[in-house]
Length: 122
Image 1 (cartoon, rainbow, N blue to C red):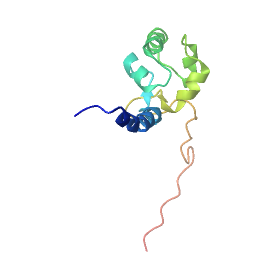
Image 2: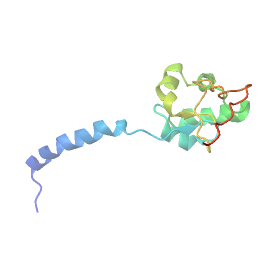
Image 3: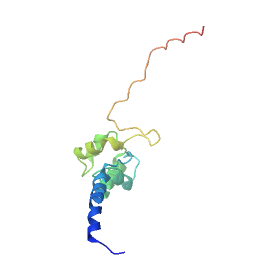
Image 4: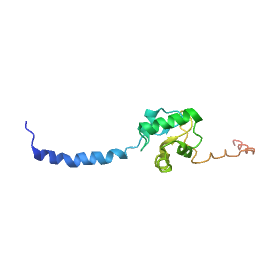
């Protein structure tokens, strides 16, 4: 089997499509209060090993992040970078998969009032 230069031209569109579509694959959300630097770098766009280590270092010195926007306190993390990754940043426990503090918790229905009794079966 010999290599034909023309056959390579057939692969160029496929290669380009693969390279262009790869960034569209969504990463899993990551908990910035529990993830290690490797997981942060892998899950967040624009966060490489150095910025991921800075996030972990800040967290170790200052305690867990209370809001997603608090990440701006980390050297090298801009508000633009936070906004770009907001949908993939979690702050709560890994079990509940809680999202960061973008939305306030909704009050529980009927808080402070008594519930209506159920209708008796006829």
